[in-house]
Length: 515
Length: 116
Image (cartoon, rainbow over all chains, first blue to last red; front, side, top):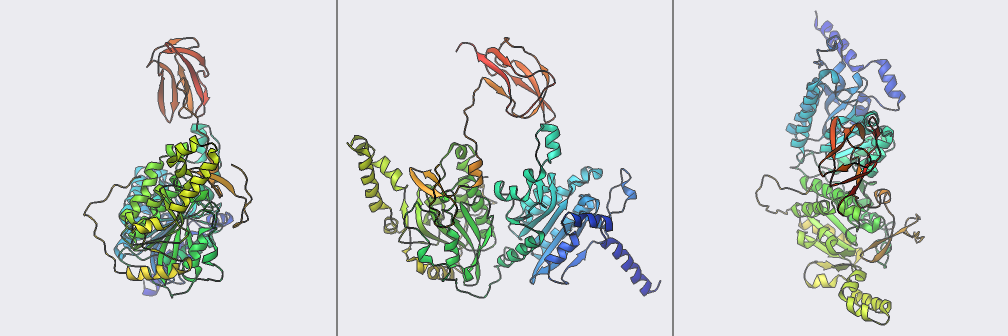
């Protein structure tokens, strides 16, 4: 054969493999409103940047007549590419090939591209669209999952790991996304569960649809398994493209800086956001937008535990992670879910050298039997743990209420915030004036002729004396009381002077965070 | 919780939430509105801790039972779980028969304690 013939032979072979599960299966995939695996990769990466590997890998199943079957690429596409110049390793499960089922060679391809990502120190993006384990391959498909989980764990905190759920992701398969840093879901397309509706019905007799059991909304609003919710695959891919601009390639780097830009102060007037009555709500995201570059804020887990707001923005061109109580939802209290949400985000930022800016306005922890029995003690402890262990620059701004355990938890000086600022509206106290007055002046109130009048007087007295930032300032627990309009200037400066921050932590294999 | 229309910021109706005797005007999230009120555990109501079926029943209504006696089998998750008497007592009511399928938290047997 001449070289021309050999090249032609290669082209023929490639053409066969590139068709995936064939025209009919592709048509079926598209009729469900889904892109094919290859279309997704191409749409996500920069034009012509995708380089595919392991196209000719063959599956290894020999039982149940599987040896007579040909599965192109064994149902997964792997390779490298760039997103706005940012290098990534990527894999996408191909549902058109045997339902994207995971056999040992499929898993080995994924493991190989993950090993690449670790060696090259660049992020890994996994697009999940699979019916689950390939039953015909038996324990080999379980081995395959295990190899992926192990690599997810080893890579955790070293390179960013992104999971995109664009189809079913069921059974053991869900644990790879669960071990990664960010999970993207799309309404009506993503489905994640350990046991599906059919098993639940046959074993337990309970009926539920896939969407109600593990659809995108469920994981965005209720379980907290997902971090980004999109209405369409296109929107989802745009979200991924945006996310990678805020994060570094690996834990030895910082995120690439952007051109500096001032906030849109005409739209977000920082002096007018906060109502004077501490019991009135407002949207804390307006405060974030009033201090971040270009008033840009990329929110993470927007729909889950909305009483806590987390997300990325930039200050003077550099990425920061914002953590803020949201008075507009559940008065901004800490509870089981909001603690989990914030703690995990803080650990991500710390692992990837992203400074933390914390905005505080909360009445404390949410009272309730359900909270106590759900383990608010060990869940609430996570936020203390993550702030205390974080060694990135930590800047805290107390906007209004900072009561009790909530004051300590929200990156107080005592958990080693580098800078703590408070607005003149701040109320830093062991608890809210109402509760405190009722305890301290219990006898006076009880024995008074008009208990309600005395209670009100005592609440006012407590407010005057303690509901301000100056008691804490007198102890040096806050560094400065600042006007709201000065916030950005102070944050910019604090980040500038913290650029070379280094903090020694005691040697250990790892801590034992409360789970 | 009262409806409160001081929705100055969002235009959405606000609710009230009491934390440490202060009432805050705020929205409630889905998890908060979905939560179930707490119900104290009643030890004389023996409930199915999992959905399953009943392959065997060893007692009938009115039987005297001793603490630790096997009352019935609840087969769930491929396991024949023995349901034991938590204390000495009498079977006040038996709500299942052999072959039944029961959902979670179904009252299987109601016991009446002796010596109380």
